[in-house]
Length: 238
Image 1 (cartoon, rainbow, N blue to C red):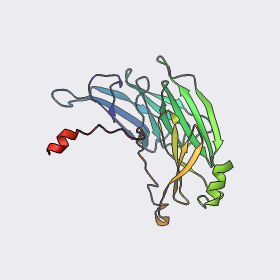
Image 2 (image 1 turned 90 degrees about the horizontal axis):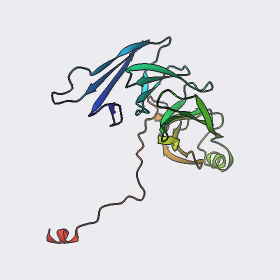
Image 3 (image 1 turned 30 degrees about the vertical axis):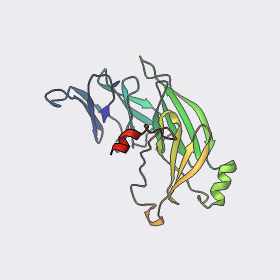
Image 4 (image 1 turned 135 degrees about the vertical axis):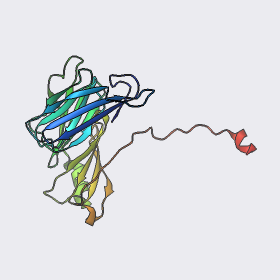
């Protein structure tokens, strides 16, 4: 990934991260007048006691630390300190295993949103400049299929009973989350502050179980959009 300006270095910086079974490697490249050249920093390899499976997602830096979501199935996150050029591990909440996503918090922290069946939990891990924070704090939990929202889901036939939801993507500051119900091919948008649940997409039945299940890249923008004023005089001349 390309790091933003607060990634700990000046100029355009590229983070190259990869894993081979039990070992994880990282290199930092800085774009100069002569091109990328050799790695500006080669981070010592990290040997883990478990197979990462693969690296799913790299989050933007938080206090010049980059967090990586792995598919190991262990309650352990992987982090990279860009200043110290070293790896560290982050213990995840005990109840969280595979079905979760991370997002950056506005107050220099880290959010984790996980789902177990239809039970959604939101955790906050505050970061400090001199350390990795004091652990995870459970800030919200609710059952996605309850109350009026549940009545709509069952009435409209969106969700058969006994199934579960997968976390697809979480917005910055844990503002929203997209959930995938693979059995029916339905994708839900959940606004976490107001707990509004909306159906936003329906896949064809024959496509529901084909890997990859679904990939989303949400874009946040001002609504309604503001467009620049037209130059009436210039339009008339043309």
